[in-house]
Length: 612
Ligand code: ADP
Ligand code: ZN
Image (cartoon, protein in one colour):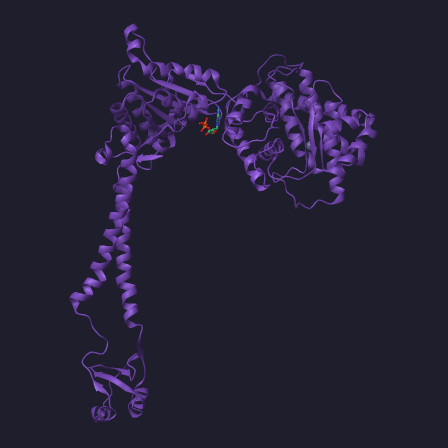
């Protein structure tokens, strides 16, 4: 990323540091160095050394005597005593009377050495730093007409000019609707006159909304890349400064620069950082800085005329928290959803990223995409990279299907914990638990086929897991399918009960998921007989975790809780009876898993169906 900014701040820090070091040098280091060699001795030692003819040079001052030994290396100091024929004795011992023992530099020379020389060094380093900085800046700003340093220091604010990295729409896989919606901007930037003739106005601001890692930044860069225009990028959080007024001045500066470079794309990431709903009671300050910044942004957007060629793209994953003023006509009045990719989209994203690494011929991208249900583009990119890393670790020349599968599991469940110590008894419990999930799933209709069962612990804390993979894209679930899912989730614990007659803590994650699903069925999907199609909960945070808020009376809440318990318990009983009826298979498969530690869905099915 390129930073075009006022460069005074780092220089001031530099000078403060320089002065501090200089003072340190002069007041601590220099006196320390000078005094290092002078040893304080008592008068007796001095007399003895005189007697032994060990004195080299000597100087008698008013209050002290300074002398050296014969080698002249060690310097000593002692007090003055009334001693009449000291001079004679010294003379006969061969000591030389010297005017200066500790060589004193002339004041001029020492001033030069201690103050001027370090200063010169600092100036030199500073000059080097500046030159380095200018070089970096000058290089990139060639892109914008070779302005170089001319634009520096002009503004108080910091604005980022980033190259769009040559990203094109073809680099963004999936997200076809978003691309279509944005391609109009590209056409406009190519030929604004065509739009002006008719009198069509381009939207000034476009809001890209969707979960993190779905390619919003990429899309914005691709718009700039396709239109071949400069790309200004700044994150909303960068506007929020420590000093009041700085954010607003940054906004002003951003727009000033953008207008000079028009046509161009301005991309504001995480716009929710400044664009949050303004609170009613912030008369006492509240978050004044953020509001000032937001107001400035609104003013700027209103201020520039239509068709100036500055298109503002903003991204957020919390659209519900944005101030309504931002989304009014004339501001961010177009909203482009950038959702998590579907099966086809995931497959394409995997392929786009797999182009950058070497893959083996056996990789079935459709299968990998099915295994990675719910993954975002960023996670898929990560999966491909993990596969490549694993291939290198294992000394292969290319990434195989197995590498891809392992990296999905790594991304989902963490790395394998090879040295985790599990007792045989625990391993046995985990085997039964996992097979319990798999069996309950396989014995019901409308569940996703089992892909893999493993009891190798993961760094996420999972001691094992059962992976189910849908055959294709799944958009709708029936009530019966959801019930089967809950039964499958309770299957692990149920197997422990059937086999061992007691339960362990290993089911906590299952319990959490089952409860959540049951609750959603009742409060959001209208699948409870008593309540019918009433929204008892509303989602407040669609893209981040999907937090919900209750919208019902306390009595109803109590009733919901009761029904959740009943619903999960009913499925738990179903799982128990399925496993009791098939306890022979449960034993057989669990023993097999215990031996092998990881089995495929095919192995599982063939034991279940009894063909060896
Ligand atoms: P966002 O801005 O939505 O959080 P980014 O655009 O920063 O997401 O995406 C992060 C990374 O994830 C990208 O650099 C890219 O490698 C990958 N990625 C995300 N979505 C896609 C996609 N649709 N196609 C290809 N790669 C994608
Ligand atoms: Zn489980």
